[in-house]
Every structure is written in structure tokens, then in C-alpha cells.
Length: 473
Image 1 (cartoon, helix red, strand yellow):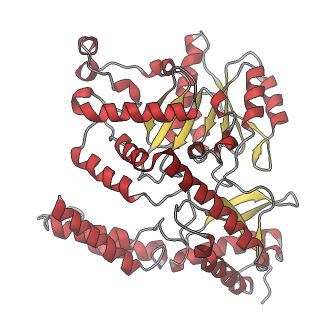
Image 2 (cartoon, helix red, strand yellow; image 1 turned 90 degrees about the vertical axis):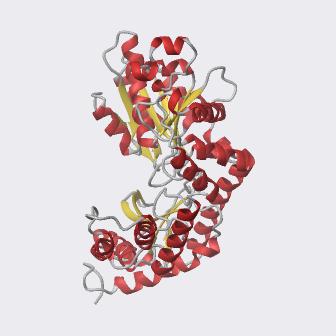
Image 3 (spheres, helix red, strand yellow; image 1 turned 180 degrees about the vertical axis):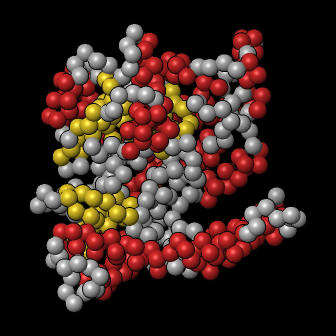
């Protein structure tokens, strides 16, 4: 392992140097051709040996990677993992415990129990029986949250549960309802990217008497906005509805004493989605579903004699099968445990604060550039939306096309990885914006000055292109 790890680190270094930027240049066809040239055939008749295989393929993947540690790679909720977390993940892979029975993961099960207990208490301070499950991320966490809500409804004689969510909700909420055979979620109008409380009141009135799960969001994907949780919790309680909060993005604000008040009201939820492969700097996957009472999780109980026979459980062997909807699963709690121990709540809170402050600094830098325009309204957690002023000088569709073309050009040239989001402008019109999601715990606004210049220069070039309808020739 020691020798092969050295080969991997060298390949990572060489591949990154050859890439030379946040993304490989040339676009999908070029990248695919270059990777296939070195990895084919994928199943050779005779093997090449461990060192050659590692060196060749790791270097190829690194050269063709999007590098979340690059200051110009800011499109998604895609974090650069902490070295300590990546090292712990290597240990998890080498030990390879499977978290579905005690005899496959004696110590790892204890680690998971300690981690989930600590993070559940962070979400639900003061409650006597909070608990949490390790998941593969927000999509699985939301699926399990809806599954548990359905089973609670069935336990009291109801056939199903009606999900109510904002138009700003993550797509996984709709997908989970479909997978579970639930009615199509009722959607609530948003104002400024956040659930409008008066609109929620009206929707809940329509479903009076039915079991309802309201899904609020703490950190929307497009804008990083937090729904008004105290008002939503109050309205849900008045209608005897349960509340689930998708805080996959915003949950780690709880590590910071300064930022945690932004999530006041989250403790009213029966369940909370919380990801640590976003603002937690873990390698994927590192998701969490916290619940206010561990008894809620009893609905996940299932028996397979070879994993959790009754007599084994009665004899004291812990039953791990009910801790997930998956069977075989990695010990993702190990890298989380190492990170929590290494940094502590204060250390993690400081990193979260740094990202939030960097986003504020980037917003100020955009506002200071006459060629660019910041989206009006409150800034998201660490998400900044902006667009070139040149796009505003074009007809609406042509302006959006210019924004999209700039993003794609920077991607194809391998110079920057910016996201895209549709959001309402000050004139009430929905427009396309460039999106920067800042998750690097060491970046500063000055590191992004060149990125803004790239966008401004590219906008100047593209605005005069005959390929943009409405542009000047």
C-alpha cells in the first residue's frame, strides 16, 4: 500500500500539471478521445501490473478532471476534500468493513454510532432521543425522510402522505415522491427564491385533514437561500403538518456560533437532511439524515437471518441493517469522525464562516466592476449570481444566450467552471445568471479577480459575435 500510494500521488501530481487549469480543454469529445486512447481496452487479455495501471489511469483521470481545489472551479456544490478526510477514506477502503452487520464492522459500527449521535445533537440540541443515519447524500436523505413520513401515516391508518414543497425545492423531493408511490407533491409559490408563508398557508388549507409533510429548504441549489423556517414551522404546526428541512447545503452553518442563527426553526423539523460533502469538505459520499426521535427510525427495521437473526440480537450483537435502506455500504462515518476530531466544532465553524465571507467579498468585487452585474437581493449562503452587463443590452432571449455561450466557451477552453441558474431579476423577469458557489476553505476574493476578468473579456468578445441573435455586428 505504501508503495502504491506513492504511485498514485505522483500520478495525481503529473496529471494536474498536464491539465494546467480547472478543467481539461477541448470539450467532451476531446476529453473522451484522450481518455479512451490510454484506457482501452478496459479488459485486456493480459494485465499490465498494478503500478502501470495506477500510473496510467489515475494520471488520465486527473488530467481530465474538474478540480474543485482550483479557484476558477466554482460551478457546483462540489468541494475540495480535506487531506485528512481523503486519508481517512483510504483507510476505510483498505479495511473495507461493510456496515450491514456487526461481524463485518465491529469497530466501524461504534464510530458510526458516535458520529451520528454527535451530529444529531448538533441539529436537535436538548432533545432526549435525537438520532441520525449516514446516507449517500441529499437525494437518499430526502428519499428516506419521505419514506419515514409515509410509514408514520400508515401506522395511524392513513394510506399515504401528501408532500408540500416550494418551487425552489431540490429535484430529489419530486423524485422521491415518485419512487415511493406518493401523490405528486403540491408546490408552494416562492418570493425572492424562498417559500412565501402566505402561499404555504393557502396550500395547507386545501389539504386540511390529510397527513402532510412540508419540505422546506435551507440552502437552495441555485441561490443558496434559506426558507423562512420559523414561519414555516409555525404554519405547519397550526395545520397539524410535519416539517422536513432539506439542509444538505446549509446544515453545516450549525458548526458556527455566528451563522447558526440563520437556521433558527430547524429544530422544529421531524427530520433534517445534512450533507458533509458540501460545506464539510468530505470526499463523496458523506450525507446525513437527522431525526428528532430515534423511535422514528423503527420503520426501517428489517430482518435477514444471516445479518440480524433474533437470537443474535437478543444475545447483544448490534443490529445495523435498520440503519440504512442500503445493505452493503462503506464506513463513510470514519472520514467524518476523523475530520470532526481533527478540527472540532470551532475549526469547522471557522471554515464555514470563511466561505460565507469570501462569497460576500466576491459579491463586492462584482459590484465594483462596471462590465458585470450582481443579481439584486440577498446573497445566498456562499452562492453568488451575476451576469455581464452586455447581456442586459440584448433582447431577453439573446441576453440569456450570451450568458450560456460565455459559460460554455470557458468550459470548452478549460479556463473556468461556472454554474448557471435561472432567477428573477429586479424587473420581475426570470433571467439566466452565471453562478459561483464558493466552497474552498482557503480562497479569498482576490483569488477570483482573474475569473471576473475572464468573464468580462469573454462577454466583450461574444457580445459582438454574429452568432448571438440581436448582437451588433
